[in-house]
Image (cartoon, rainbow, N blue to C red; front, side, top):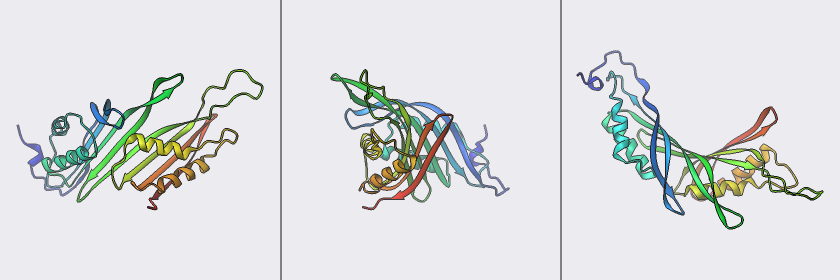
Length: 237
């Protein structure tokens, strides 16, 4: 069988991206309370193919992923990208991992519930590496009681806050979730606009010493349509 990857190609055309996508793969991520958490991720892996090569062996992407036994953290993410770049002789390597993260919540009376938070890590390695962690946190209406008495209203879904960050140094997923929730600050008596929630989140993220860069998208699920606001910024510290 011919080694397609190492066959020369005289057309001098670079392929922007070549790889595998939507791999369903069991992974282990860091958990602040329990040290490790097992979950299932959807993985995309691809490289920039130099013009001198005709193609690459797609099975090598999964072989590289298997070598790390699904243990995904900031260090292993960098090492996977490095091995992809070196083994496939690529100009740049890229990986995207989407996974649900389950956060323990105190639920009265004294029981513990689990909340699902959608997470995404995406990174690239060319001359230097670039890694972004993204989370999507649901925004719920505050717990209110009817003025006429009776049972309290149930928690309602107001929308979502999607936050992406680049780090100066390590931060736990749980701490990033807490930071986002701190920035939401919904007033029980005054419904917040997407603009005010976005600006409030931006202020909280900009003040955190572990964050280098951030992006915020807040979406409100209105009847029949959605409103949104977004911003990008860098840390003030």
